[in-house]
Image 1 (cartoon, each protein chain N blue to C red):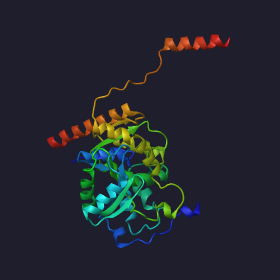
Image 2: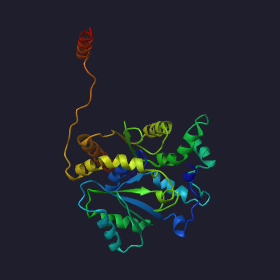
Image 3: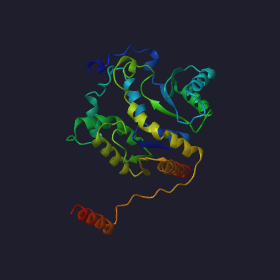
Image 4: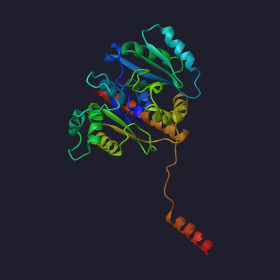
Length: 151
Length: 156
């Protein structure tokens, strides 16, 4: 079983396609769940505490805006855990849950630099492109099975 | 917008349990089952779950072992048209539920975008085939020049 990071990290389609093949998608919702079950935080949406930008320092320098560091404190652990990644490029505005272009860029940069297999897809706009996307994801996941099998 | 600054919810014991998870079940366009059938099937499984009927499918919440078992069973109804994803908040949580606040729920826009191509994904899973998509390439310089000159001439 391989832990696969996905981008956008709340994607239904990517997470489901990975789960169908028996692997674990690293989704943001799990991180959010951990956070809201924390008894110390009882009032989301103000659920970023002053601790979070400090945790985010692991992924971004001090000059980086605190919003990026705060977001990285939630997304960063997912990137650390990742053994493979699937990234969707060229998505329309509003696709994804981060709400911050710089965090998106930094997260994708970290995934690309991590020395793990990364599949980069283009956001599909019609049926044929969706076929290509699904085939690519399935092929990629099958290739991961071979890697994990070798280990 | 002060109404959207949500209240501290009155959470029960289950809400604080880290083992209790929530999953959303989506039915893609062209499915052979309805939302109601899915919910009835969940009830028939007789597992200790909270089940909510929604417009896109349903939502279930409970101990992770029970939730994964229920999903495994429910997928058998229509494997290529039933999709699931995690959800951070429990069903009806006042911090996210629209019954307690204004505007669309966070995450709705992403769901709306993905739902538009969900039918195509189901089709690709049901009838897998190799498809070649022609890559979009920029126009050749000579052709571009020709069009440009035509436009300029027609303007004169």
